[in-house]
Image 1 (cartoon, rainbow, N blue to C red):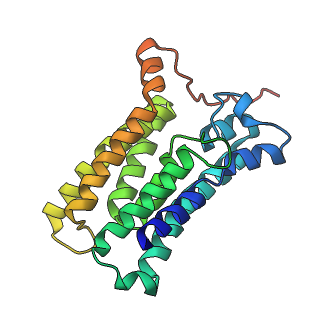
Image 2 (cartoon, rainbow, N blue to C red):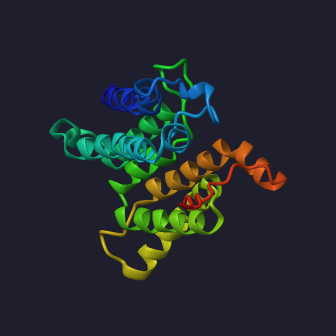
Length: 214
């Protein structure tokens, strides 16, 4: 019962559609504009950089804080198999973002929320993965491509750091490592339409705006 409560609390938290709320505050329903996604990328396209970054931050924090809170709740110290608690929380928040109960079980792709949750359990590997995301995006200007590559390399980075340093700050147990692989696959699957567009050459690319001539 305690595990179910943790899962549903995480699910409800992850389901908060910050992108939709931000869009409504700007007088637009983001589900009918741009890509129709409620994630930060679509918010950036429709509402501008300021709101896009704000949405990314909120989606990241709604993944980060539930994991931190769960790790420090005294009631959860009495549970058996505590190593599964972070997995349950991350599953809940990511599923909540992808299939939000507040908007008829639709949502975003879960990248920012996953990143926030993973920052709470494997911060170094996640930060390296985010740097790779930024590097790929800076070169190719495709958010989807950057997200897919960052998701794929994350479990590899976790294993590499564990082998290289053998330190508690970089170590994750086998259940969490297996879960990271599953989570990476989930992110890739959620981007299947983007993958097809990338292959067809029709994926939306972020282009730098030329400065206006005076």
